[in-house]
Each structure stands twice: as structure tokens, then as C-alpha cells.
Length: 573
Image (cartoon, rainbow, N blue to C red):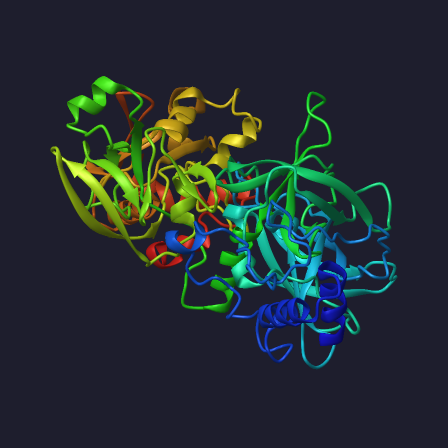
């Protein structure tokens, strides 16, 4: 196994023995010092601090022994991998055959028809004994999966696989197999000190199994953009790299390899749709992958990306900076709102000017020099983990101060990027209630242009608070005698404001209020609903609900009238 790794490094590093030995040792640490004990904690960057990541990725050694032969002015080895790829040599690149089952967000008691799809992945670890190991792929390849098989390049055999970790926000997943990887050399991962962002115009290879054929496909391209982008899978903004190599359906999850080192520099995750842009795609870069693998190795760290949970205003206006008593040397962004339950709650306040985050100075447009690139501020925070304490430098009332913030995950008022879950819902008196989500809005079309305007506004501009953590929507009216007069045209798609005079903060509070109304001896349950500032009232007779719910379930072929989320709250009703 290690001899195979040495061959990979020799191909990238030339013939210098010392660089080759050092690179081999570093890659071996990534894969686990014993070849199968773990992903390699020594090489997974536990915390990408500002001081560490802002240093050059490759330091030139005056004596020339810097791990690469013939280092050029750009810091990269002039020796490149020969481009005579063959599928046998790269059988660590695998095809994933996935059966998935998506929930129906409109009729949440049922699912959609099972779908079959293919994707790509790369073996990054092989167990010390047997043919098991770990495969790195894109999260959307295995999202909502019910059955997964893995097939090696140029092999007719398929083996069952399972998802062991997934981070939908940055479209990454780890899949495990118990057999089938005998003799497979894992794709080399960069040593910890060399985890970096690629430079513009850096040449890369994209490997995978796009639709239209069964054999391994290898395309060549260059890095054309490095920035924080919106991931189509999760609708989260995170660090990504654009390459001018085609990434087609089936390519997703495949490795992107550096032509200079042969190491993994990214995971392909999406391409551009439409005729206006051709031969461009995106990859998840190595620093994001390193953080993901570090989180998998350290089971005590939640994998989600952290966030400050604040709304910010850029300070490009000299007049506004003067108003905020900023010095000529001060740059930063102003806090305009702090989300309830966020990292910044109780620490930051509207009007604060954030000057530095984790020791990295912010520009007036919210960007910063990080990982050797000018990136949006969110990239600094997303290099950390939930629970990490991050120092902030800020201005408050014209006075400079330093504060620490403990990072938490961002909880949006309207959730998005939900996979591997079932929609929460409850039906009472023929009225279907569920939390507003992007997935529900997308039932009108992915671009939301035909979705109800008042609900779309909540998705884009809704702000959470102590009494508003979710939006509970009256999404359907299943007509019955118990709800006569309350048609879908009159009250459908309204969001719930309160139950029997009590405000509704989220779906759990709403269901608890329903139970209190049914068991509290009241004659009626009074629901306040509305689409604007003018509410409407919906009234249900408690005495009629139990018989009506049974009739409605039979009439509309609904097997359950509530999701499993609320079994404890509604038990016995």
C-alpha cells in the first residue's frame, strides 16, 4: 500500500529522495498511520486559524529541499504528471449507483416515486484488512438514498455501500463499503501543510462517470474563479472553485486532481445549466474537504457550518463611516440585526462595526484576505467548528473593544436544503398544517416565481425572534362538514398567528397548543391566521374533531394524521 503511495508521489515529485520521502509520510498520515486506523487526524486541519491559513501554502527553502523539485516562481513544482491516464491506474475513482426516495412536501404523509441515479466518488482510505474503506463523494449524489452500490472503474462487480457522514451545506459525503477495494490505491490527499486553495489558471483533471457511457471520463481544465458561492444543493453560501472543465450529470462527486502533484484538490459538485455558459463547473476545494474530514474524525464536533447570525450593512459610504466615528485606517461592516438564538445574540448589537473576525481584518465591502485570496467574511467562520470561541474586534459607540463569540449553527426562519428527513405535519379537522420551507415553496417551481408572494417574502426577508422561530402554514383544507365555510380559497396558504389567543412560535408550540385546546375542556379551538397585518379567524368544534378526523383519513386515503415528530405531544388524541 505504501509502495503504491510512493509511486504516486514519485510521479509528482521527480526523483529527489528527500522530498519524496517527506511527501509520502504526509500522505500516509492523511490515510491513517497504520493504513486503516482512521482518516488521519494528523493531516486533517483541526482548526484553520487565521494565522495558519494566511501563510503561503508552499514556503521556498533556500537550500532547495522544500518537497518539490524545480520550484518555479509561482511556488509549484515544474514537474507535472504525464497525461497518459488509464482506467486501471485510477480505479480508486468509482461509480455510485443510488436509489433514492424523496418526501412529498405538498402531501407530507406520503413519498414520491423512487428514483435511480448515478454519481462518482473517490476512495480515500482502504482498511488495513479486508476490502473495506471510505469513499468521498458529493452529498447530493446520496441524498435521500435508500440503497447504494459502488462499482470500480473497468469492473462489472458492484458492492453495497452505506452513508457514514454527510454535510449537505457544502455538498460532501463519506460512503463506506465492507468489501471490493482489494488492491485499490486511495486517491492521495495533500499533507496538512499543503492544504490550500488553487491558484487561478492552475491546471486540474476532473475524473468521473458522466452519463452517456460506462467508462471512466477524464477532462482537463484550469481554475478560473475562487470565491464564496451559492451551493445549488443546499442554497448555502460557502467557499467554492470554478473550473473550465465540463461537469455533467454523473460527474458529481468525482475527484478533481492537481496536474502538478496528483493530489486531490477538490470534489466536483455542480455544473452550469443553460446554453449561455459552456464547459464550466464547480468543485468543493481542499480546505473545505479538510474541515469535513476533520469533523468526521472528531466525533465530538457537530459537522454543520457555523455562522454569526447577523445582518450586515457594507460601509462603502465615507459619510456613514464618519458618522460611526471610524478612523481613516478602520474598515469593516455594520451590524443591523442580530438573529434570535444565534452566535452573536447577547454579544453584538445593531450599530456595532465589526473590524476583525478571528484576527482577520475586514474590508468595507465585507471581504477579507483569507487562505491567500480575497474572500467573503463567511469563509473565515466556516473554517471553524460549532462550539469554537472566535475573537472579534469592533467599534461600539466610537470606542474600540474586543469580544469573544461562541459559534453556533444558523437556524433560518424558513429552512432550506433539507434532505434525509420527513416533513413535519399535523392534520386537525381536515386542516393540514406544516412549517414553511424552501422545499414546500419549490412545489410551485424551483425559481419560486409562481409561489405565493407572501410566503416567498418570508423566505427571503423573514426575521426570527423569540415568538417567531418558524412559520406554520395552513397548507391544505380537506373539505368536510367540520370545516364548512373555511375553504382553501379563503384561508388556504395563510400562516398561523395564534391558537386560542396564544402566539405560535414554531410547529412544536403550535401542536402543543392544539393539544391543550382539545384536552382543556374548551368548546372551540380558535385559530388566528392571515397573510398580512389583517388576521382571520378559523374555529373548530372540539366535540366533532375525533370523528371527523377518522372520516377524513378514510375519505382522502391518509394513513396518518401527524408525522412522527409529534407522537409524544398528541399521543392518545
